[in-house]
Amino acid sequence: MKQKTLAVARRLRLLPALDSARFVREKHASAAENRQFLKAHPGFSPPPSWWMHDMYRHVSYAQYWQSGIETAKAVWSLIERHSHAPRPRVADWGCGLARVIRHLPPQCDRYGFDYNARSVDWGRDHIEGVNFAVNGLHPPLPAADASFDAVYALSVFTHLSARSHDEWIKEINRVLVPGGVFLGAFHMTPGEGQLLAEEQRRFDAGDLVVRGHVKEGSRANVAYHPEAYLRARLFDGFQVLEGPTPFFGQSLFVVRKPE
Image (tube, rainbow, N blue to C red; front, side, top):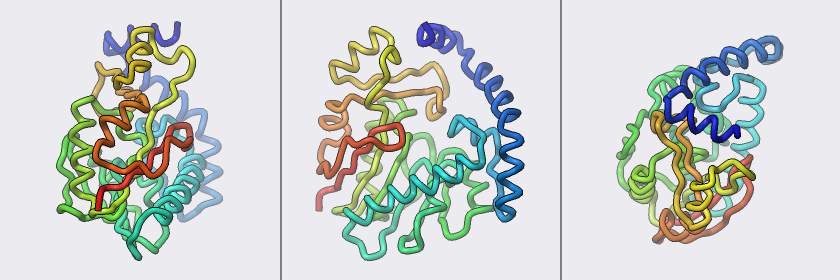
C-alpha cells in the first residue's frame, strides 16, 4: 500500500512537498544530537542541512562523519587491491558534500565531481586536499582522457535515467586509464513489496527499472539494477573483478577497463 501511495504522489508530483515536510521533522529531531557533536568536534564545519537531507536522507552530523570514515576505508581497501598505480589518482563521481572523499588517505590524489554546484562550492571552502569540480547532469566530466586510475560512484547510477546510464558508463571509460578500475554501488536487491507488480516483472526479466516523474539526479528519482542488466549492458567491455557484494545497504561491483 505504501508503494502504491508513493506512486500516486510521484505521478501528481507531490514528492518534493512531502520531502520538505520530512526535512523539517528530521532537522528538529536531530538538533540536540548535532549540538552535542559540534561541542565534541570544535573544528568541524557542518554541511548545509538541506543538502544533507537531499543527498543522504538525514541531517545527523555524527552519521555523516562516521559513515564517511567507514565507507572511505572500504573504498580505499578495494582501490589498493586492484589498482596498479603507486599513487592512484582517484575520482569520486557524485561526491556530494565530500562525505567519503574527505576521508581517503594522503597516499592518493583526490578529485571530487558533482552536478550540484552548491555542494562543490561548500567542499572547496571547507575540505583541503581535494580537487573539486562541477559536472553537468550529462557528460562530459571536466577531465581529460585517461585522467584517473580509479573512479567510484556510490549511489549515483541509482538516480539516473536509462539514457544517462549509457552516457555515463562511456564517460567513465573515457576518463579511466587503461587498466583503471571503477567501483559502483547499485540498488540490486529490492525488498519484498518495494517494487510494484509491473516493476517487479521487468526487474525479474533483467530490465532496468527507473522511477521518474521527478528531477533526474535527485534522491526521489530511483533506478533498480538487475544483475543481468549490469553484467550484460552496463559493464559490457569491462572485466568484472568483484561483485555483487553487500556495501552499506547497496550492492557493489568492481570492474576494470581493459589494458
